[in-house]
Length: 181
Image 1 (cartoon, one colour):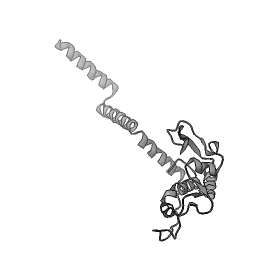
Image 2 (image 1 turned 90 degrees about the horizontal axis):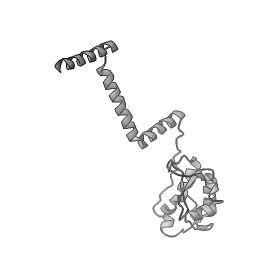
Image 3 (image 1 turned 30 degrees about the vertical axis):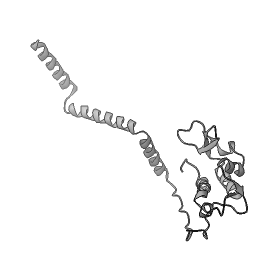
Image 4 (image 1 turned 30 degrees about the horizontal axis):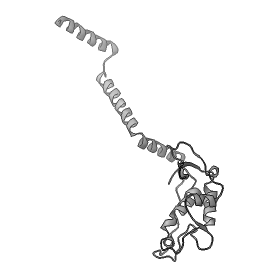
């Protein structure tokens, strides 16, 4: 997920969405998320922009380029409890998923630290924007490339001739056509 969110929001979002990946959840040892996870998720994302995915079910998605209307999360929900409920989670504080995999759970040998996200320089951000634009607008880029090719072709065809020479060739060709008729 990359909607331009802060790294803290992305991390908490991933923690919440990885609920179903936790082995203790899959084996039904844990069936609810911790209230503290909901609160940290809400606090990390409340200033980030979301859009309504479906009016019927009132579900939220991160704001994208094609979203019609976007607002900060805090304008849709008022708390972590409300956010988790909106995403369909049951909340508890005793035996619950807190956003971290249980190292003693089935199939997990050790926890590896999450790699830090690289901080992009301004040039790298601009390059990423150009690549994203090119990916979304391939037809436009193709038309521009075709136009540049045609302009280069016509310039090459007229290379080495002054405007007077080109006009004289056109006039001679017109006179030849007149003579034939």
